[in-house]
Length: 576
Image 1 (cartoon, one colour):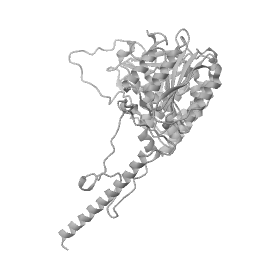
Image 2 (cartoon, one colour; image 1 turned 135 degrees about the vertical axis):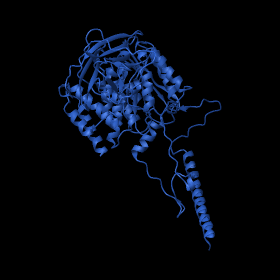
Image 3 (cartoon, helix red, strand yellow; image 1 turned 45 degrees about the horizontal axis):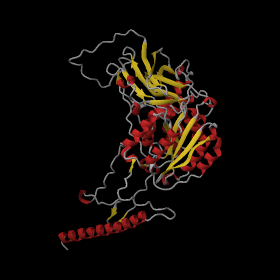
């Protein structure tokens, strides 16, 4: 046989093998399609929507998300084979795909907003830094969940401000009429000896349990099929039961559920009848698809109908966030939440579960609803959020809280805000009372860190050419202050903001002489920088973070700082 004939016969065989493989794959796809169409035993198939019925679309698809297309497998002659796995040309059989790891499966199904670390900014070009406060703690509990499973968290799941604000700090209690106190400390930066670190600490006025305002609560509970896992609806029910046990006889609770349809399971009921409320929670079962938007509307209507003037009127949304919108669009849903927040009914969000957690959705809803977002990964976390910090969770003492820091160019050459990337505001927003910002609950702790570069040391930072038509004004101040912190806030029932302001002097305090709170906050921020792979992490290591935190445990009555040390150790082990 000549070479050309052999070549033709060879390519014919290859073509036949590919056709056989494609035919086998088509049969497999048909069998899979039939399996997906047929309902599982004991599960009712979802009814086909009636003609003209509104089509629900996923909120997670409506919100902007970063996505990356899967790379195509190269085929023969540069063409795609069009099959999921690789073809064994010798046997004509599709080889099995590599089984994805748990981390890959989790990262694929869960949704997080993209975060770009804040850069260093020159004081001469950007002397003002403005942002909204954030009291959410969900990211810390979520990071703990990943590390507990032996996986590093996705970078965008790590929000450093939420790691910082998970912990209580020994800041002084507020005095006078202000609902919170402000403390600022400046000392050496633990990860860059040439830089300084400034910690801004805010402590909300605590309210004892017996002084807590009356509560009008509506539990908005996701009972869809996606909530059936043990760490979802079962944990959710026991968590809310613990909350109900803390309420007083004059507090009220209603329960709204949503799945294929929403419904009022329990009308607003006095906590004199706690057993009725607890029983209603116990009887909840999961099943069906999810229609979250209609449930939110019903929950707000119920809260408004039983509004307590001067009380805590709040919807508590408990879900994995994987729900479809019954309202016409995501924009309409957000507008509804913003409108109800102005009426005095606030929204707090409790996230549950793993594998399909829609973190980005839940954070946005809580932000627009004048509430906070917590992730409940265990009964212990439920105890922290809904029992130990009940007043912080339910009682808002200040709303639309904004921070603006002005830096003195004679004392600070450049700075960067650590965390709060999705809370940044324009400098003009600080004095604009129409701009929404975060809320502080009774007893809440808020921490913000700035890394400061001394004048003349800001080498390598981007610059701009001198202006042609405007002359840059030289610094005219002789002040010893390195920065000024200003806060604007509104009392819960007011729409005009109030102002707090204080100047700060850097006394040259060494890191070793800083307070335990300063050191521990620095260690937590360093941990977050490592998890995120921050470009400014320098030579930080998990072992170094463990050493920093170990020397700053302070008063750790509830063991949260000790738990943090354990998480650092786990990250170190996983990273090796």
